[in-house]
Image (cartoon, rainbow, N blue to C red; front, side, top):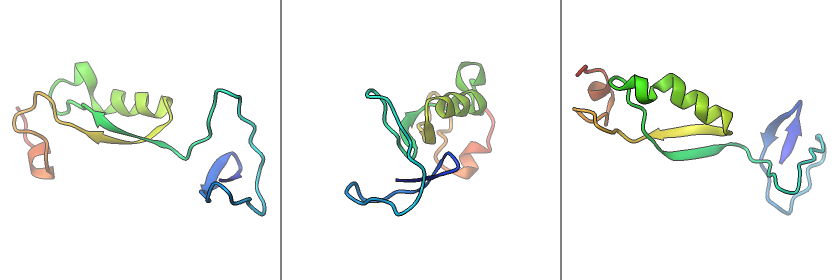
Amino acid sequence: MLVHAGRIVAVTAHDTVAEAGEVVAVGDEAALLPGLVDTHVHVNEPGRTEWEGFASATRAAAAGGVTTVLDMPLNRLPPTVDLAASATSE
């Protein structure tokens, strides 16, 4: 990976050495990743936002290094499967 100004700016093959960039030291129990994807997130919005809404779900994801979440509708009628369904209220 190529890191510039504290950000990953390129992902390279594992055996490729970048020409320029910063050396980033991580501990033995750590890994430097370009971002994690959580494929199982229940964002109950609209609906039960007191349990888990968009704001709390995305804040928690970002705090853990997750850059992408895939919402799985839970207890929502109609299920949030497209833009039209997400715009309806219960």
